[in-house]
Amino acid sequence: MLLDSGLPKPGGSAELKGAGDYVTATDRRSEAAILEVLAQEAPGVAVLAEERGGARSQTMWAVDPLDGTTNFTRGFPTVGISVALLESGRPSVGVVLAPFLKLEFTMALGRGAFLNGDRLPPHRVVDPSSAVVATGFPFRKKELLPRYLSVMEQALHRFEDLRRAGAAALDLAWTASGTFDGFFELGLNTWDVAAGAGLVLEVGGRVTDWSGGDTWIETGNVLAASPAVHEVLLELAAQPPDR
Picture 1 (cartoon, rainbow, N blue to C red):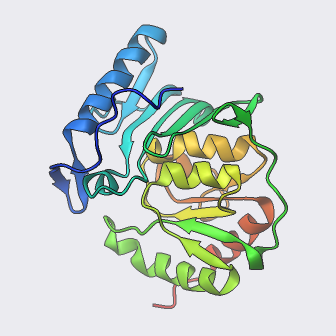
Picture 2 (picture 1 turned 180 degrees about the vertical axis):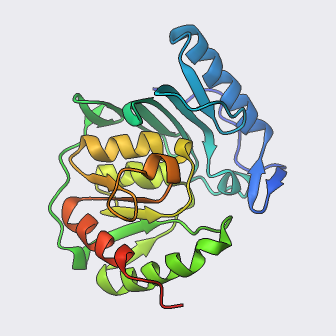
């Protein structure tokens, strides 16, 4: 467990990288620590990291050192750290930490997914009408709003309720654990989704792009859910925006 030592307090000042896109000293320290470990334990493997960047490769680590930076700067503890090994574009190993909530999600391809060391069960069967589904707003890419808002409006009718916590890696991890029954968002980055999507896939969920294809790791247009809920999400995403 990597959850108990030396945690910074949520809050503090942030540097603006772009509209609604912040970086803090904690982001940079977290990324430096992760990269140091990867360099020691997996030398020669390419790394794509949020702050440092990097080139894409068939085999690479995807690193999000602080998912939910806006939450962090405002003292809202839904903050994650996400690291995944991608092989041929798919997650083979992944970890999502929620340090302030003391949660550690891990997965390895074909070996199961775990929460704080306990194996997560297969996705439960859920009637979509009783599903609680997580989402995230495309606030950095306003051109995606018409498509997104149309799906969100329909989702409010088809599902029991929606949740928006502001950290995609944790939304996906909670989808894997059954806290949520699905997740949809547009325009995310590879480091946002890689580990969490691996968790969903490892418990028998489905992860696709908004057309039902496999470009989600590149486009960040993600539908992740238990099979029945995923089917409804695909149906909603296929309908043209009404705005």
